[in-house]
Length: 318
Ligand SMILES: [Zn+2]
Image (cartoon, rainbow, N blue to C red; front, side):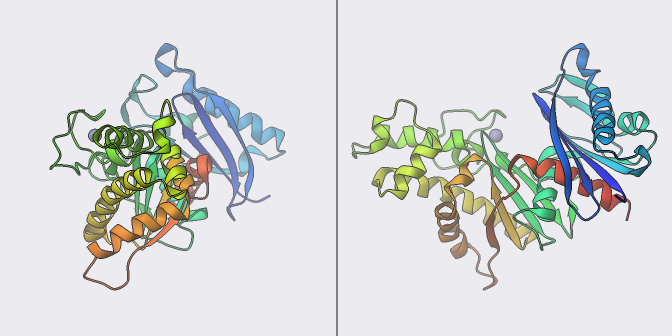
């Protein structure tokens, strides 16, 4: 079998886990519930026990486990210390140290979940073959992860890649606050919830007929489905939202100049139509080079985190 690496993607409801061979092949993957009770003190032991159980079931000796990586839903310091994970209610926790102790002292690496997922997409997903990758997740919020020269750029305070809270809209007096408290964040425009919100706004501000008006609760998927079918109002909404995303990507390019943007999350199911819209608005903003950044769809879905976590510890052992 050779050496084996565990990848853990801790979420507020479940932890996803996977065992990988050195050649990136996935041996098995599974999920366990995240037990939030007692201040989250069961979380790390549950993960360690589950890894041991699945190693045994797969007939792999514990000596072959060369390392484990874990992505956590919050900021994590380079030594693994986590001050707080809001959606699990954990404080003063060091998953890296704890997991290493519980797994017999093997090397463990920790990272923020969005950054770790970006590393996964670079390794085996939409960014495969590239070293300078920015991953953007368009889901309930807008997440991001920056990989430069194959390494996660977490920043001095772990805030690197938090592109969802770049304030993009200064011109329109935005009456609604973002979850972060600011007004006009990218997340309020280009996330799934943001796109639905902009659709409601456009419907209110015009009398244009649209199939979107027949929907009780309009979603981002409704917007893209209707836009693809030629619904004019839906086209305007999609175009507006992707204009702001493209501007954000252009700003990122001016700072770190990635080779490729990998777009994931529920909204990315709109596929090539989405990429074409981003391309249309992005390219004219990049004038210093003819070679524009590539755009690709994420391919690993919910598995990006376990891939990235395993890759993170592999890289640390090189
Ligand atoms: Zn915000």
